[in-house]
Image (spheres, rainbow, N blue to C red):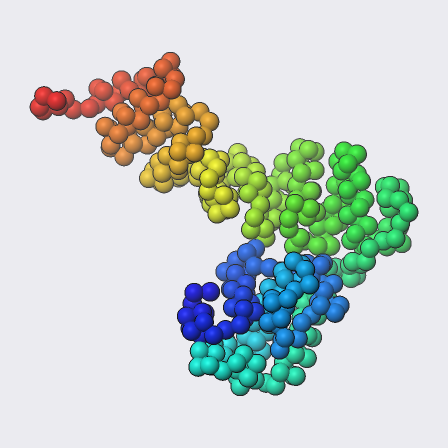
Amino acid sequence: HVITLNKTRNRMPRWLSEGISVYEERQRNPAWGQTMTPVFREMTLGDDLTPVSELSAAFLSPKSSTHLSFAYYESSLVVEFLIERYGFPALLKILEDLAAGVAINPAIERRTDSLDLIETEFADFARSRANALGNHPDGPVDWSSPTLTDTRPETLQQYLQDHPLNYNALMLQAKSLLEQERWTDARPVLEQLVRLYPTATGSQAPARQLISVLNKLNDVEAERELLTTYCQQDAAAPFSYRRLAELEASRKNWEAVRLNAERELAVNPLTPAPHLHLALAAEQTGHLPQALKALQSALALNAVDAALLHYRSARLLQQQGDLAAARRSVLKSLEVAPRYRDAQKLLLELVENTPAPTAAP
């Protein structure tokens, strides 16, 4: 936003500013930016796709919060379309025209084509993206809402025999099985949902529910594999990152532990768990300053077992040759737990190895 607003001297419409930013998010990390969802699909294929020439109104007077969210996504698609169709330099020229005082619609026409052509081709572009959602090898996903008198698993199973790719019916069936804690029966239903819509994110995403089921069924390897895929596409799943870090730590995959600790820190840096995982990974790979910093952060956040964390910090300081700081740290450990035998031994070791003072204190 800072870059584009400065480049245009604050003379750009909100839709273009937001559209560029959401587009750039996806370029940096696909998990960050908005993507096509069943709701956005329905809006794109329905009557909610706003003409490019009227996109400012989608921000100024949206019908609902969902429409406002869709305006962000549609704007990013317009930017993506313009770059793919006319090249990145054309977008820069549009920004330069805006800085010179040209209005947005004439600026687009100067650097691309007529707005009538742009709007027609963009609508085709957006609808092709919408139709691609759920493009399953067995056929297109049926996104319609089933009309059922009840949602018992047996009724849903009968409906699904005639509509095997109906996403909402499968979701209802999975929900019913989960409520009954029928984990084994729920697993294949959720696996089918993940195949139909693999990029779904959020608390109700089939992948998130399947991860929970795999955990309850104690299928650790399947849980880890699915978590690895899911954590790459959800930018706000701290507990998924934490669980994956735990599983990777048990396999001594320290790089994966570090990656998922940093993912969790990006969402919430004010919780001890990711700092502890980061410290463990750094300790095991010999990155002592990083490990020490992570331990100190965990201590500042009142992590459990302060005595152990002070002791680990003392060990790291000792390895780095800072014996005075190591001694202070191990004394803090003993202040919390005076009978901590390892800390007592370390203190004696540090005292023996600390040179005597050359002058009276």
